Image (cartoon, rainbow, N blue to C red; front, side, top):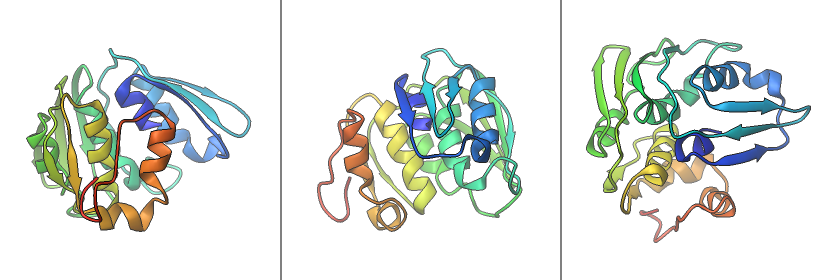
Amino acid sequence: MIGAAITGGSVWVEKMIPAHLHAVTAKLNEMGIEVLLGRNGCRVIGSKNFRAADLKTLPYPGMPTDMQPQFMALLGMAQGTGIIVENIFENRFMHVDALRSMGAHIVTEGRVAIIKGPAQYQGGTVLATDLRAGAALVLAGLAAEGESQVCGLEHINRGYERFEEKLQALEAHICKKSSENL
């Protein structure tokens, strides 16, 4: 869903229960990204001109902390300033430095991140420090100018089955070069 939003693409997500992702779909809609809900899925239609929003991670049914890094990558490209408050885990902003190296404008203090956009991500080599951070960096890389290399694939591989194949099926230009590089 965030992949379609960050690249301005359109994707149908199957085999999901829309009510379980209400916080995610509501936040995407608030940002100006169209989410059309179906019975067992949804269509996400990205936009090149979406706006920033604020979010707070909360236990279900609130905003999942597992989506925070991906939303941070998305907010980096949004019009305006967004604030993320991480209420679930400490040290959940380990992806910030990598996003900054790609061009994001992010300031953190404790459990709060302020993201000013829009930034145009630039390709480069970044390190995935955990599973969700890795997904966020891959998504930022898909939206970046130039080639991006995400190292630390062991984190992505342990949580996402055939991640690069699924992205390739959605026409992403992505390849796994070795066990350490994507």
